[in-house]
Image (cartoon, one colour):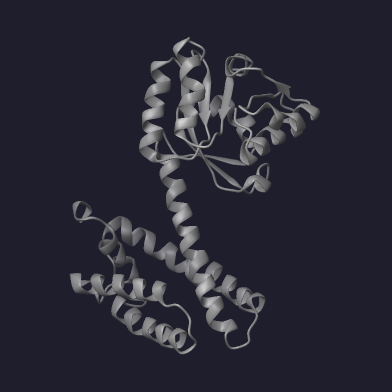
Length: 286
């Protein structure tokens, strides 16, 4: 249910892998390519839900989700169904949706799609799920046709929470790479040349740092036996100087330096960079 770019990719992949698939969309013309590929086109949401025990929904937002599902749920149309919600939203919305589905007799699984539509069907692409383990296990083979299904536990909001966190990581990485690219290309290097070195740095040293820091964060102890926060503060000044001299925007490095300085001011100057999490967490977590 829902045939935007992502919903259409999901349905097309299911069809391509031999799964009988019924589709529905508010604008029926979007279903024509899928009908040509063998999909059954439902005239109404009620018909779509009645067609299968597994209901996949991928619409614009939770308002659209409820606009589609509320009327048929009130009529008992979701009772006994496995509802897999692939609509993007906040973790709290997923929790509320799980409770709503339960009140209407449906098993609920929330999902986070960690790819763009062209990546659907690639087994390397992650699809995150949380909520009903029974729904996940019952439909794992079908879900695996869309991408690698990773179950994150019974808490319905966990997939959405991971989705948000991973997107934040992606945007921070993109912006750091683009800042570095702007810096080196100002002196004549190409983006392609820089990226070859950057990827080696990310997949080698940086991934090693992250792997080392994760247990430090879990333990709340940050031994500064590799490079301390104070050392990092000095090092980032070199980046800020080089970028300023070349007219590159320094908003990101200044933000990073400010966060490091708050970490040092809180007593972590001689600790590892992992201690920066103490400046990022709210007071309740300290």
